[in-house]
Length: 253
Figure (tube, rainbow, N blue to C red):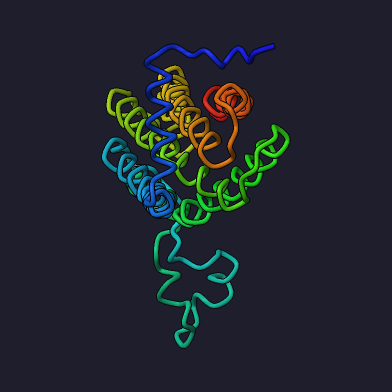
């Protein structure tokens, strides 16, 4: 029985032909390496940009514990000692006002390393899973071929980062952030960002569709799978990715 993916619409078939030809190009490996570097750096910069969005759109002042003042127990013990290194610092106020947006920016900057290590980890896991899927389907390519395909597919993740940043910026720019405490501001921001889950899910679907086309073309070119079989394998991965995207967009807030 022929695969239901064997006869795809002509525009889709033409796109898959071009993707397959790209994987047969001598520059295919260079493209994969370039995508890995670009998406890794782009994701890390996306974290920085997220902090910048918080700083630019949240202009509330909140009262927090003064990080420069020692704990109260320390000040009670050493605060009156003129020779103590804590004496002058204990004269600082216990609570100070800070800009909530700036605080959130600094907090976001602390997650830059997740972008730098997260993308290569995702690349490796997806490549190995893709290789298993290709072998089960009768593919003949090497593990290196699977890593190459996964490298190309990273472009979808960069699209998601860009769409996510745009949606969050739009949501926070048009939101009324009026909380006077850190917790209240967080609730206002979360409520605003939650309104973007629909567009973010659409963006995820578009990114997954791009990755689907890349995987189909890659499996054809590198694992010698027929188009119908390659499309079937790619669809399994796309379905899993879409199922993961739904709670990520609707349940993480």
